[in-house]
Amino acid sequence: MLFSGPADHKLAGIRLQNERQNSTAAAIRETDQAAKELGQNIDRLKRPLETIVKNFPPFAPQDKERVKLLRSYTALRKEIDQLTLPPPPPVVDVPKQVALPEPLTMNADDSQIADHVDKLDAAAQSLTALRGEIAAGTSSFVADGRFASIFSAPKGSETLALDPIASDSRAAQKSVEIGQQFAESVTQGVTQQHPQFLKGLS
Image (cartoon, rainbow, N blue to C red; front, side, top):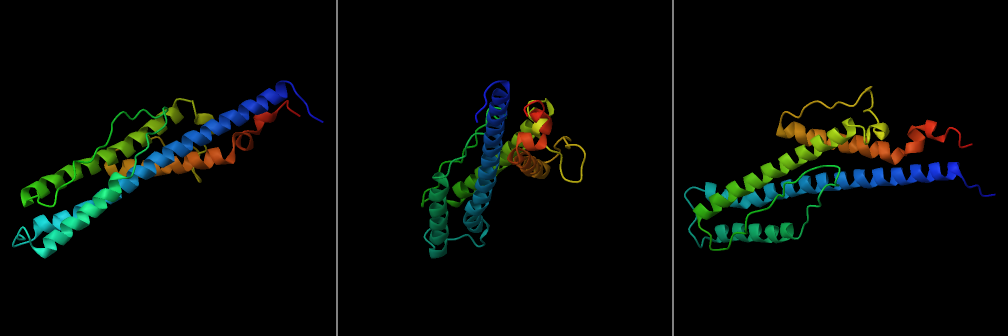
């Protein structure tokens, strides 16, 4: 037998809210994970270039090892350029865009390579800042009540820690913590965490 009325509307609303929360959590995790992976790829991208600029005595322009290192950079750069960094959901206000410098050519000199490494460092720092902003933005909308009702506290803790982010490493750590906690709460489901929603439905 099928029933309709206020109870059905309440359950439908709960399901819709849970779907939206799951979608938001997934989008946050996706952006943060993509930023983390891009940062790791930038580190890989820098290695052959740093080998060139730090070599002493300097490589000759057509040195086989130098050419090999530049080709390694070029191949990895092509892979990275095909990756995308998805934007976080609208609930997290992160307006900055992270862009890599233009690729080096095979005839780049050591000065150009050194300058390129500096620009890659700047891009990596921007990614770290982005992850920090995602963490801070997530903390903010949890704290202001829009998602607080479905956000479970960390295991072994009574409240969610929303302390200020003091460093890049703390920002990255905070982003991971928030993403994990948010994911755990939404995957459990609103009705499972808050059975009071079901009062009056039976």
